[in-house]
Image (cartoon, rainbow, N blue to C red):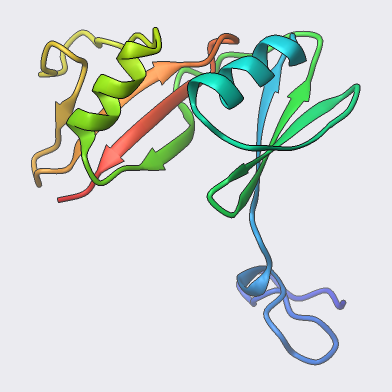
Length: 141
């Protein structure tokens, strides 16, 4: 691979755009791998692919999701992982039945389940994992 100037795509020696053709890997931190595994596997239903002393790896519909052990989780206050859903009501209801609590934010017009409808009609709901990472569901109109 060769270095490219800012503003130029990252290409390999053959001129292929490396990142545009590479799979994305998502990361989220946890202070407790066993607790995180239980949540992501049992509550969210993601299949576990690998587990070791420093990470649990899940298949998130073809995207590798690595839940990585850390000493302390920083809480940035914004969504770190999100899923596109086709039926928001069904997704929210299903997760609520498993104990997931959806967030209500001051100043946002959300329904009783925490679903906010954007000005263009998209619907978004937020919840947290056991470490406080903000996760979301989005239904595009």
